[in-house]
Length: 348
Image (cartoon, rainbow, N blue to C red):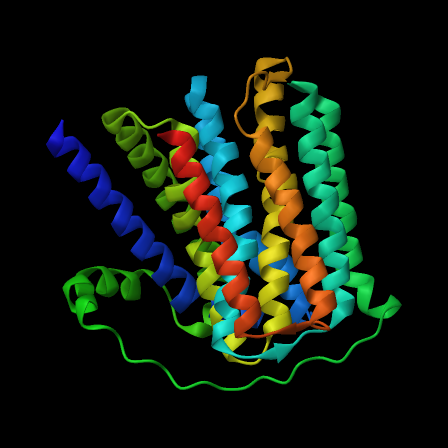
């Protein structure tokens, strides 16, 4: 049992590391090239391409958890809800310490409106106790409307594009030398930057495989320690699967694109809720030929916390006049710490 638990923890940590590397070195560069080819603005690319790609772990974890059946259902939902809180509080908190910036209110208003709507729809679905085809159709339909809004928002509310600021590369920490074999394999698998489409697609494939390892590891850890699966999902998996979002957001924030970083965080949350849950539910409903029961779920109270967090964020941005600084970052990070303490107390 001890050996099995140790192996699961090691697999979990290695998966987290590989998610970091794939996102930082291959996903973000290929995403930038793809966004420029499509002539997308920074916030549009952040809210759609970057959000969808870096949210791939949550999507695949949700699908894999549904395939397992039983109480593993809440692994997918818990990961997405926990990841949404992490994205909102920790990612925005982290980029506040990277660079002070003023963000354009126009795209932020769009993302906040759709994110609030997404949370409301999630609460509506769980409150009903049964996830039907019409819930799923509404989820996917609203996401398609969101994509249209992202692509056309600048025509309705014009705003200026942020200039890119080049950053020097940071030196690798000393512990990374022990993982050089993994880095060597990644270099051999991925192609040069001119093959950005291959790198973009293959990055998502790797993220999906790593997500499967994360679910397997989480199930083993949960069964070995006796912690409810949804607690593992809300904390450990939520953190691990949000690493790509955090890394990509910090990278673009260093470049002076704070708006893109926040659009990535909010866009990821919208994708996670509407597609990360909607698509797996659609697959399950189609395969079973019946609705999905969520009666007795432990997630509802955490959905209300999501709603409170986005309202709080909106009020803070109004007070600071859409500025992001260390004071804002400290407040956001402290809020997430308080949430984690509350989850731990509930589990004990």
